[in-house]
Image (tube, rainbow, N blue to C red; front, side, top):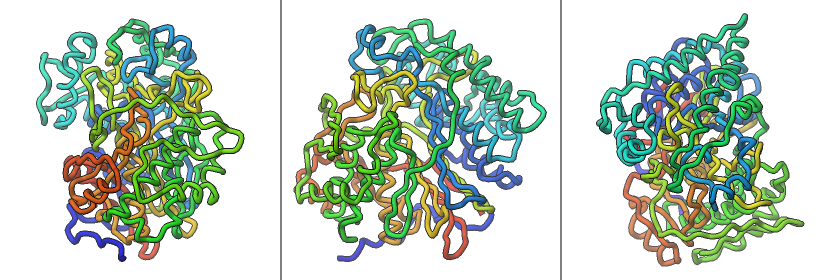
Length: 593
């Protein structure tokens, strides 16, 4: 059996050039990043400018009150992947006891009790200070302009506002004022402004200092200890509606912001077919992709082809096993047995569990001296939740969130960042700031001693998971996708198709994809579909029929619905740079020359 060849037609070309490349989930953000490169900025300047623009133009997918995870390598050290850690932890008042006293069995999916300490802005500023070259005011000028002067509203943003309009008008009046200023949902394409957010960024950009680095640090202090922290503290003390249908006050305080900073961490890596794949640590879901690759590496190429029934089945089963381990062992405990979980011995044990039939069980692996955590398994009906764009309930909880950015410059700096949280529907808008808090704490359990329990000062186990690909000792690819729990699941077929199948980046992004829902969802209300598989119809009736015959509970999601990948990198054989972006949703674009 040969690997399924790529289709001759692609929705757009894989871009190639030698100057610089950017790709993201929104064309305006990509264009802003490329504009920075054209004006002499490096990949880090471009990525930061892009990130702040995404706060403005994709407010249903991320915001300043949210978080991010990045991974990068510098031109000076191209073989050392570094994680940019912008995932804030739980506030000091976020205890299981407090939430139980509020009558909660789960952390809500929206409202301030779901908010971790905002990490995105401090992380962007840290990256700019240490690896960028531009002044903060110049980097923020793009976002300030679009917030103050307006930008065309995405159809999906309009739909999201419409979905939560009743929540806004009845319970979150500050959000209604910002997003429904005339009392109605703005139409797709309407020019919308966020003047409060523009003022917030202008205040940060005007921070004083004797050097570029000092000015950026002054802005970080304004965020963590100044007007931003004070406004957040004051606003969340008033009870407001949560996804539970009850009103609660938030517990996040100015002291929480002052006591935390973004940071850098070493990446976790796995070698696969001549490439090294680098991810964030097990406080994220990133190592689950590495575990999936380790399991699959023991099979022949014919079982690594997502376009065949056998390959699709094998990939889904490997992902179920890796995600069961994610639930059982991953978390911000500092004591995750990752060496065991990524070991060849564990991969072989897990691989042996894959049979010809789909598993409908949650099967974590064995780690000596530890009992795997298995939560209460709440069953949901089969659905296509998280199909590329967020599924938003009328009470604000969201699945399938997120944006993504990839940039590589002519010097060899390369970065992938997945910003998320702080969606317009996650919390009421803070009027003075023009943004709202996130809801990442919904990924914690109100159960003591779980690896992802709600614990003050501990990071929730985030779904944010960008990837860096290395070959011959240097970083050659940056990759990522929105999609909540699906992020790594959609990246996996891309890696298999490019590394094993020889696809070009755009061919791999365009190709039909799939994912499993046979594990506990990271998002409220934490349900699962035993044996669940969500597929794009373009996989074909034959493949889908074989999956059903093997026992998968298949949901057809449509032809172009799953995966929102983008990528940028370097072809080490030609020295040319490349970039590609997702066509689904007519929103993501790559640019470069």
